[in-house]
Image (cartoon, rainbow, N blue to C red; front, side, top):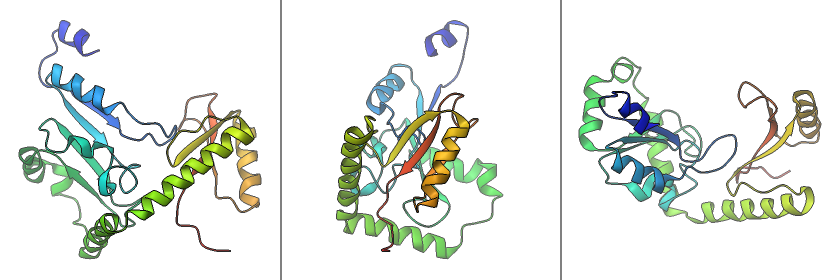
Length: 213
């Protein structure tokens, strides 16, 4: 696509936008291949780490952590999922971050995050570094769930904390979700337009944050 665009006279810098961990299939983008592609075509990569922050990478820094220090990669981290706060973080080259601070209208004219949320996010980041067993325990649950899906349902696991179970038909999907919810499982049915037609699914999210009955 980049070559074709260039051949048709495309000028300027190419931006490649991906999720590191996709929210509906639970699979990961091939970040190493994309980084090599960006290098060959003088492109930037924007990596949305919303579902990887706090779970994957060293100290829970996400799947893009392996590319820290590169001048053509920008990573976006939400504070509203694993970190338990609100807002988000942008990490990338210093020059680009300074540009966003000074020129990004949505940032300049947005309401500033509250100091409480900043403290909550900072403490959550410290906990990620200090308590690696949380991520280990979650990965153990992911592995266990994967084995049970293969043995009990013949479903291939995603390998992440997001596990789709594609049913296809919208009505059947929502009916199964309702029955599971009635039995105490907070599993949501996902249907078009969130996912393509014919791929309605149950979206199973594995977490450590389950209270004792």
